[in-house]
Image 1: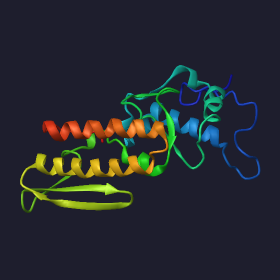
Image 2: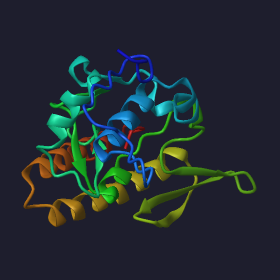
Image 3: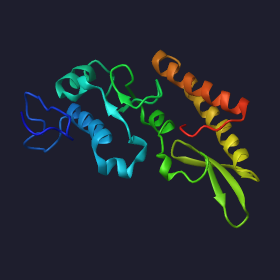
Image 4: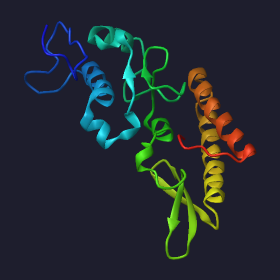
Amino acid sequence: MGKLVFGVGINDADYPIRDSKSGTLCPFYRVWQSMLRRCYSAHTQGEQPAYLECEVCPEWHRFSTFKEWMLTQDWENKHLDKDLLTETKVYSPDTCMFIPQKLNNLIIRRGKGRQTHLRGVVFIPETGKYRARVNEGKVRKHLGVFDSEYEAHKTYLEAKLEIVKNFLQEFKQDAKIVSGLQRIADKIEFAIVTNTIVEDI
């Protein structure tokens, strides 16, 4: 057996994972390797603290097992995601699915060490006030300026909820995506009603 990939992965592919002429990496291997990198590369986790403590289920340590699962999925031009269906740190067949990039961007998480203010909030030193903003696709929308940090955060949550509701309509034919989006919508609505903070959406 050769060297383990990121200390845990077993590359048991029975074919060259990189095309000798084009240098192109096998798409199944590329996704598998990227998943392992997020979980087991100290460099990657230093750059992206949101992946700290993430792990890959033992059966997916073997490339052939992951590829077998991926072949059953609608994966082309989509991103492997573990955050839509559940709140988990584990990549596994039960927690993962492939989703469009715009949905993946909706639930990108930040590492706690890089957060200086509540989610969706920017402090304005010149005025001592707080600006609320939300990303909608590639567009950053400014939602207003507020006296309190929480007020700005709540406005961000309200805007985020509307984005989730729009996605619910757009993907209403996909029961699995709808289930994940509804979970997120319920979490945001609960936070708004109870005046609590959400830092992972």
